[in-house]
Image (cartoon, rainbow, N blue to C red):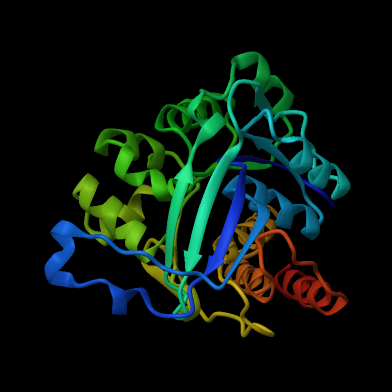
Amino acid sequence: MPYQILVSGSLAYDRIMDFPGRFRDHIMPDKMHALSVSFTVRNMATRFGGNAGNIAYTLKLLGDEPVMLARAGHDFAPYRTWLTKNRIATSRIAIDRMRHTAVAHIMTDCDDNQIAAFAPGATEIPYPLTQTTMKFFRNARCAIIGPSRPSDIMRQCRALKRARIPYIADPGQEIPALTSSQLLELIRGSEALFGNDYEIELIRQKIKHSRNQLIKRVKFLVITLGAKGSMIYQRDTAWKIAAAPPTRVVDPTGAGDAYRAGFIHGYIRGVPLETCGHIASLVARLPLAHYGTQEHALSPTDRAAIKKLLLHAA
């Protein structure tokens, strides 16, 4: 059964590049005050991306109905065609005719470390979320608030609370731009907080909370650890979720967004958090085998494995 899920965040054209060496070999710690480095990359490709687009793409693969609350620019036509081809709704994407769609330049070294530069384009303009708009989402099962303008994050947080739509807080790259009071408001009343270990530590420091205090702020906390898997915390219980072994690793970009889609797919169906983590881990490995964040598909074996996890947990 498909469920409507609201997905906020960015839509972007990803410029993906591979650096065949290691960034650490080209950065001198004692010269960080005068950093000047240049990397010659091996490949470059343009792909459809942005965290909102990536999560929506995988949710649709899983059989859900994502609705993106995001902005795009005058050059969005190829991306819209791609979304339409994959039967993903575009009706709530706001278009700014004066700006370009966001662009992310992502460079990955041979240790899967990444350096990214993000040109926000149309995402610099507030997303038009009003009480009238929210009436269209009465049947939404949940939402995820991803990285976007801090003002948009807070506007969506408040609108979802008023509409009593449960949401997952996933501020990601916008954590440095959010004040401690904004972070507390976002976290307070959310279903869950998602982030990698660095992001969660940054949040903890900004709001001056211990790990246990942070866990008590939300129904549950999810920390992704890359190839080491993930951790799920709920009050006094913790689950260590191993990373599912990938068939191959071409590019790590997009694995975190796929993880979120897989977790949400299980969570809105009421299965235990540990099972949600295993579904998320299984799904997160899929983009690794492709150059780009929306190039993967679900094989019959993948679908059977997810169905088995859902049925076993029911």
